[in-house]
Image (tube, rainbow, N blue to C red; front, side, top):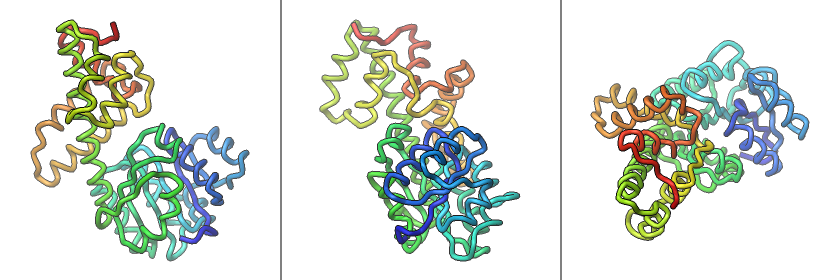
Length: 299
């Protein structure tokens, strides 16, 4: 993709707004649209071009990035009334960076391809901090040519981008990522609850094990949040629940039994039902604490 191509960004929420801003920082001309006017007005004030609908954004752009909440929103934005498909010209590229069901991405890609529009599914990992810092890990499905064309977008928004296979491969890889992250957080929560019940300082436990085989980026990010009782969201429980729901829906369609993911779905659903959906997913700790009647905190 040549730098002179104009980039549209549809979806300016907790992830999309900082991603659009990073594209602007990198010198790209950016067209923006969201259902909520506040982030649109903010970015337009800072130099972005106003789009009035997904179709309008596509008509004003060469490459359109989608960053919305889930499969129904992606489908509507791309294929619905006033959707991208109505405004995009032949040869345009759509890069859906939302975390949606990969089988839905494949259907969207097929319909756009029939209209002469290239498509990548390119979900990300790194949460709001990664979106702000431009250090997201990007998992991509599509052709090599489309991936190469989108490279400047990935360079402005992420620290890494890997072409994982054909359309849908990015989404399948993101589901794998979300299984591993949730399982890590749940295991960490159980470890800190157990050692807290035994009278140990959870911060000391963390410092003792983080340099060994158990250490991980997840542990380094989430353990301090747990023992400091800081559940301000970098990635919300309700969004991780959405992703694990997509895991289980996809597993059912493919006939794959996933015992741990099914348990994680129940944990996240219970937390959401208790009103904790807006907490960071480090709040999985609360579920484990409630079962054990133990609170993890620094001593």
